[in-house]
Length: 268
Image (tube, rainbow, N blue to C red):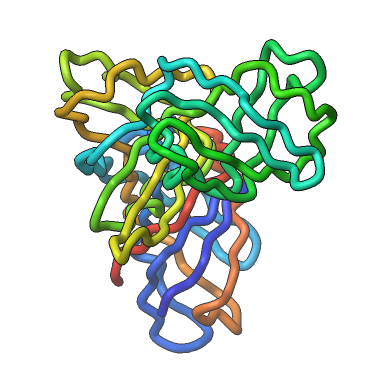
């Protein structure tokens, strides 16, 4: 039987071996933790209808090879601003196709240096114009039809023939290692990861935070890593009605945790 434990906005999927529908032992739990401060033997308590203490027993790292990047070092000039369709056309030398195909709904970019259109915009859709140009439809109104200023685009990491967004929950950090000359190596804050299909190929794309540079688009692109925390628990589950959709509140967590983590389940 699989139950759900919630901790301060963090969704933790737990597996427990129930002897009946009314009681059982919570024996294993795994969380995609984004490297946010967990350590071996960190504990949390489960109050209310349950009792016991959970303890972190293992920390592992999820790593996958990066198949390509869209770098942020080229000049991206606004060439058209259409206030009726909420569309910007953007010049991105040699990267028009990459950005046009990879930018996804929900990703953000900003405009600087314009007379009236400076600000942060949220993408609704993107499309390729040519190899050096792409367009984006945004959710916000565009104040002016004057096409000026520069687009501050997010650096993009993409992964082909796989969907791995579940391992990169929104508003987290990841580590790049093994990039060409180490140029893109280091810890990077990112907006979100999105799975989609492009020309019948599974793709995951991750948009880094604005202002986080990717300065080299040369191969090898390196690996992207995120931390997975596995926890072994000793928790009794008392009461009735615990089913596969049940929820238990975990209110005391050490260390303290943030929100936005995505489920990664271990088998009972």
